[in-house]
Structures are given as C-alpha cells and as structure tokens.
Length: 363
Ligand SMILES: Cc1ncc(COP(=O)(O)O)c(C=O)c1O
Image 1 (cartoon, protein in one colour):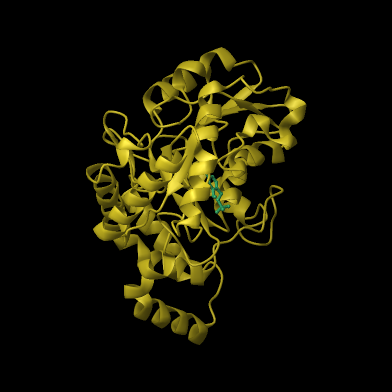
Image 2: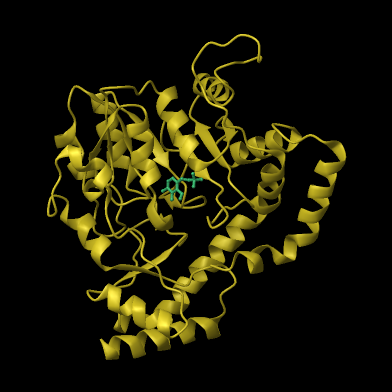
C-alpha cells in the first residue's frame, strides 16, 4: 500500500476542504456528511445511506437495526477480519461459522442451509479482498428461511456479482473508510447502506443515541457519527474510486502477464465477478518462509488472516477445532498479500515477480 501516493494529486482539494471546515466550525454531521450519504446512495440504487464512525460500528448498528440480540445465531465466514464476528458477539448473539468456497474465499452458499436453526436471524457474507461473495443462492436461502442478509462490503466498494453492485444485494450493507481500504477516508469512518427507508431511519436514530431529535430517546443506541473532515475526504475520493479499482485490476493483469503464476497460486475471479483487488492474495504452501524471504528482499508482504475466526481464542467456547472448516483453514495457512495499490508501476510489478521467483527457488 502507498496511501500518500494515492492521494498526492488530490492534496490541494483536501487542504482546501480542511481549511473550509476550520473556517465554518461545522465538525459533526454537517453538509459534507449529507453530501457523501447522497452520493453513495446515488451509486447504490438510491438506497438510504447513513454515515457512521467506522466499519465496525456499521456492522454493530446494522445487526441491531435488524433485531439481532442475545441468544440469536448469525451465520458468517471464518475467513474475515475479526470485526465481522465481533459485531455479532457484541450483541450477545452467537456467530456460526460456515466454510468458504475455494475460488474467492467467500462464505460458501451451499453450506449455509444445514447450519440454519430456529435461532438463526441473519447471514453476513463478506466480500473478502475485493471479490464479491456469491450472493444469489445466499439470498435464496435467506428468503426461504426468513433470514436477513448483511453484506460486509468493507473491502469491496465497486465490486459486483454479475450485474449487481456490492452493497445493493443485502437488506443492509456496511462500508469502512479506513485509510487502507480501496474506498478510503483519512481516518476512521464508515457507512450503512439500507434496503428501505424504515431501516434507514432506524440506523440514523441508532447512530445518534437512539434519537431522531436529540430530545426524545427511543432506543439504546450509539454515539457513532461520521465527522465532517472524514466526509470531506471521502467526498473528494469517491469520484476516483472506479479509476483506482481499474488500476488495481490492471496491476493484477500485470502480475499474471509477468509470470507470477509460475511461483504461486494467483487469485481468481468467479464467473461474472468483478474483483477490485483491495488485497492481492496469492497462495503458497511455504507461505511463512516466502514472506520472510520477500521482506528480507525489501518487498512488502503480509498475512491476512492467519488464524480464522473459528480458531480464535475469543471463540474457543463455541467448540470448533482445527479441521472443521478446511477450505478457510487452507487459505489461512497459505495466503499471502503482495504489494497492491493503484499507483504500482509495471516496473515495480516486475520487481516483485522477480523477488518472488528468487524466494521460491530458495525455499
Ligand atoms: C471485512 C471487514 N469488516 C469490517 C471491518 C471494520 O472496519 P473498521 O476498521 O472501519 O472498523 C474491516 C476493516 O478492517 C474489514 O476488513
């Protein structure tokens, strides 16, 4: 990642927006928050959008808006950032981990039905690394069993499953503007995308202490507001996200053309999916050694996510063991993220591929 290179051409716009915010003194839930809510809504079939403090709060608030509470079960993927599962447990509900499909490492829709019980309330597929989860059969299973669906879109703004953009398929979708995300801010921020106005109104109340007017309080909510500085940055970045995503896809093509596939297993796209490569995760059986050698050689390489959720200490009480969810475990044992950002050049890609070749020879 090279965050500064990405926003360097927009620095003048950012400086001007910050100066204007300081001049006006409108810091919280002001015109820029409304502007980014409207702009994202326009991109996502006019769904009501509500800015919140971060992508984790977006999930916590989404679950509450859909009525998830103590004793409920929520089906999700074990191969995700902890926030997805944490948000479920935060409500006293139980995350039920279902294995991932082998192509995109997203929640496997064919394995969901057998885990549905009378306690199941919702399903959270995660569009992991920028690859849209297989939504069609997930939505069918949800509809047949009366379950809500929350798309965790923290890593995949601009990706699509067939003709359906990420964020338009579930009852709710959640976005993170964490600065390393493919649709970033310049600090913490997030958004909840709702499928109908009632849900939008509930989420709006929940982000502000369960109140519509700051006088009457109808729910136990949160103080989870998007601030104007973040909203200003996200407004400036939104028109560039498609271009950045295209450039990420170009980098992925270059990796392939440069022969990276001789050394490691390359990420793939399921038929019809538009992968936007929030992360470029390859696989190799000697992943840890490969990472060490690359880092020694000055190439950034990182592991996302080495311990899947069902094997995390916090969930040891749920009774999972190693071997229970083999596809997720295989990704966790072998996945390695290589350099990926919109400003990578073909020369840098060639350099990375040469370094991977040298490292693999030494393993
Ligand atoms: C899949 C996923 N869900 C949720 C989150 C939480 O977002 P935030 O860091 O904005 O709270 C992240 C961010 O790392 C994420 O990758």
